Image (cartoon, rainbow, N blue to C red; front, side, top):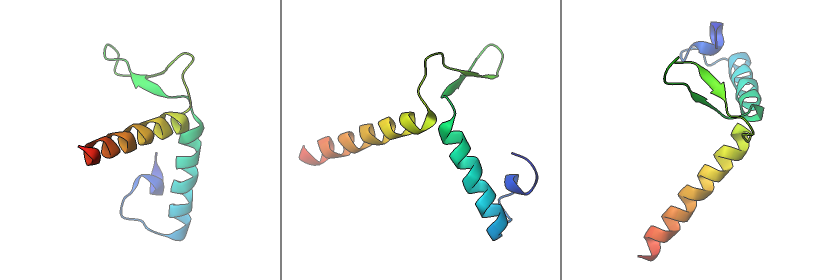
Length: 71
């Protein structure tokens, strides 16, 4: 991010809308990991979208919470 979108101090309607758009774009991208040798992000071949990965992680957290509450 760059410009106003990168600032945490600018809470204008326009900037918040732009952040929402950036978030939606990121959800559609393929999940990636940092290559520890180069320090660069690399897409995972055959990977799912960030949205699908986030949904799976949320489900794992929910399952863990339910498991802890029953014990």
